[in-house]
Length: 426
Image (cartoon, rainbow, N blue to C red):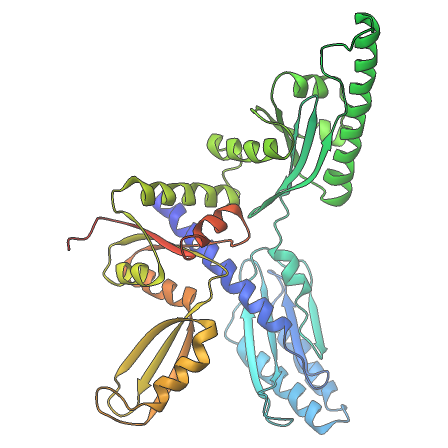
């Protein structure tokens, strides 16, 4: 992978994590009235058009009966208009803005006007303005879905497995057994009659597989192509006789040999797809390669593969971590306790479940440097902290999905690891 690809990959995985985090946060916000503003701006829509529209909406908002709601809506629109003035034109993929009076938890009337802007991962296809009691995030969530879904079919005469592969995950959707007798005929049956019965059973089984393929790959997932695999010549005969729906038959990306069929065959085909680089642009394939390299370094004994939150952060701060891996469901956070008198900083990396107790304990004790009592706490997402440090020292950061097998492998090692540039001298 080239350095430019490395950089793009790093930003892609981190940006995806941060955007998903923001979407989840916005989805949990509820206004007291229809006072939360959402604006979707397509790439080529003139900014001055949007500003003009929002000014008109601000005028209309003067008719809102509730004083508090009216004030919140007008304030949100004014803040959005001022923000848009920073742009000469929308970014290449357009722009999404969320602005409104966010509850502080201290009662009605204490809300704070906040604004969030997002450059989405794909071009915006709609022009949308909404003022509601919630932010309209569905369009943005849809853009986060990978629209390149590939079907995986693994079969032989005994069983079949049907799976799907998206950008960052794969799963087995259905497994079938054939019920077809083996090649050795049962006693008392003539060879010709046995083969005829077996052929009929195989024909019925292949039709059943094709029906499931249509249901899963077309009706449910609308795949962009399929990969067919399995041991022996069964898969080839299945395709040659054109049992599949023509939309799938004409969209076979690859035919692969595998040692297994069924669910295990789907898993094996995914690995072969990765090894042969057939779907190299898929995030899941990239994660498989990254984790494979990392696990290899951990167990080779060279000392270049390390894991654990404290070990990785130490390596990162000292500049000898080349690649840092972290799952998107890691529960660690960075807690900073700052003394406002002497500016001394205490830094802790703790599990989120320990946050309240640890923060109270540190703040209730005097500063260890000057014994001052004026302390304040700052909480920081651990992945955002890792991003900051990795940029400073020129390291790569990859955020791995915690829902995949690769994520589970990293989770068994503490959900964070690193490949070092060199083994440090102790």
